[in-house]
Length: 82
Image 1: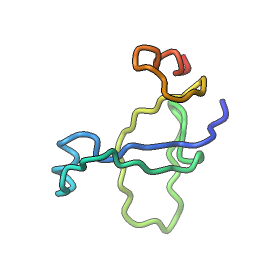
Image 2: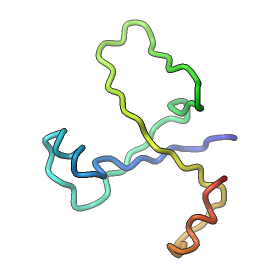
Image 3: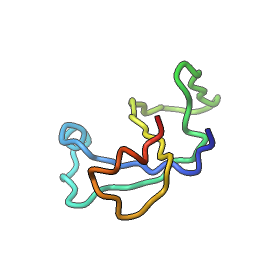
């Protein structure tokens, strides 16, 4: 499946905000990742030579299969690929 863009939500749970010693955000913290950051189950994680400290964590990803705007909450899962 082709990946167009990866939109991430940061600082979305209190424990992580405390761990980072940050103030709890009042609005969602959104940022983008390149499509090359996505790997599949069982794929190797490649870290280029010369890279110093690597910060890692497990992330949950959803693949949006059907586009849309202003989707009602009760209909949202119909837009997620299975």
